[in-house]
Amino acid sequence: MTYLFISKNTQRQTNYLTKFVSELLGQEISSIQETPDIHILDRREENSIGIEEVKEFIKEMIFKPFGTSKQVAIIYEAEKLTPQAQNSFLKTLEESSDDTIYILCVNNEKNVLPTIYSRSKPIYINQGITETSEESKPPILDQDLVEQFGYIDSISKEKVKCLELLSEIEEYFRQELEKEIKNDNINSSRAISERLKYVQETRDKINSNCNKKLVLEALLLYLNA
Image (cartoon, rainbow, N blue to C red; front, side, top):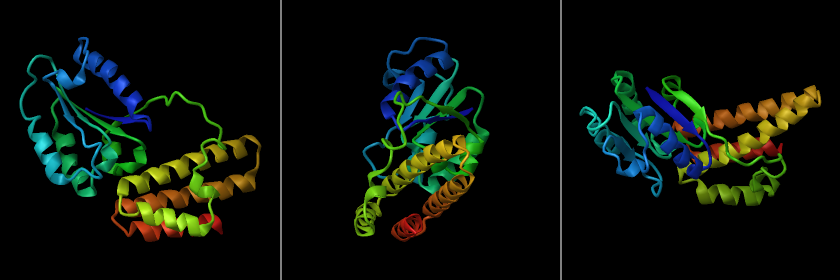
């Protein structure tokens, strides 16, 4: 079984993990780092997680559980998995036994391949903060085009930061869409829906290893039109 833990708040993910894994293993877990049957791939200080790191991690899961009925594999910030690493991981997910559980922690379910998502059970973790759309508006949307392009240039080499920006923009427009739907503003709702569609197309291109700077600049040109 594979779970997607979806939250922008990594601390809440960690707190929820302890409780969730305790229920999975049928015993109280005080620390997931110190339990033999819990394996963790933590690259939160890195920009990406490559195929070789995934292969090494998978090797840890070939044995039977040591002290419990199940073993659990946790990958923090799984949105950092390269497409090649995710594709390599797919076969493992498909062939995993009933006593092996995979948990992928992500900031947005769209930042993993659809094939990964379709084989996982998504769990959305409450952020603990209720924001208005104005409070959650990404600062880049208030900048002029020159400032926007300058920011894109500063993050374009890091895929994770690019995807984080897209998630922030997407969340803002989702809230705007909900507001317009509630107010029965059909034309505005359609316009925002088109913007959300373009954001998703941009994410797909980045996940397909297109030039991140160019596709993000194209998105901002579209949003400023």
